[in-house]
Amino acid sequence: MALSLAISPCPNDTFVFDALVHGRVPGAPPVEVTYADVDVTNTAAERGAFDLVKVSYAALPWLLDDYHLLPCGGALGRGCGPLVLTRGDQGDPAERGHQGERAGRSDRADLTGATVAVPGDRTTAYLLFRLWSADRPPARIEVVPFHEIMPGVAAGRYDAGLVIHEARFTYPRHGLTALVDLGEWWEGDTGLPIPLGAILARKGAVDPAEAAGWIRESVRQAWADPEASREYVLAHAQEMEPDVVDRHIALYVNEFTADLGKAGFAAVEALLGRATDAGLVPQTSSPQTSSSRATAWTS
Image (cartoon, rainbow, N blue to C red; front, side):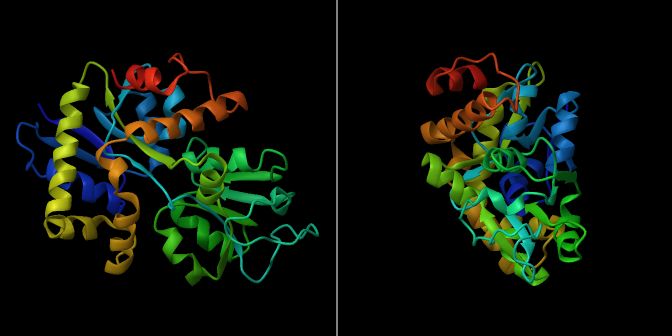
């Protein structure tokens, strides 16, 4: 029987899953793919819609009763965090008398009174934003399709926008400024990588150890022969420029894609632990230590 898989059309996902999707992983079943933004897959996973699915790490507390977290295939790393963008000609987006800061700074007063566009209410980007802005939250949050965020900020419909992925490379074209790099803030505060997207296997539908093996082999093939996936990646990329696609893959496909390891699980533990303590996500039933939680999540 075919395995149902839901991933984003972003270059890192299509690069990683190319061999699995196209039947080049020995022993893996045929795969039927759905391409969707992570906000869509977060919701679909709650319905158990897919056997394998890419979701936000921030959505795990709502999903782990029905899914195994796989220790590979996702997006986690350093220097790859979400950005909060404002119009470059406006300084403080809400004009509240506070001086805007450059990327990496964390003056939470900057967005007091502002309207901020975000790509989803259970995305890791938004969870990081809520942790960062907890002391001085913006006045209003609007969930907006990702591709509409930068144009909306540039046009003045939103005071600021929260963006991910290829927007790190393209936002200056929209005349926007990075108010804060939430990845730099997170890494500076915790010393840990940023956990962005996770791969889950639906319980009772697919063996998590087998699925992890298929994905690791797909990753291995992607690294061994990057050109094999080139046409597939470009066909689905929202940003078609080859240079941007290459930078995207280099940033988001890294050692954590092959294996989360201790640092990866510690990062997830820290993110969800802080979010739980702040009352932003439900308490998970898993043990609290990184090592035991890793076993519980993945088994």
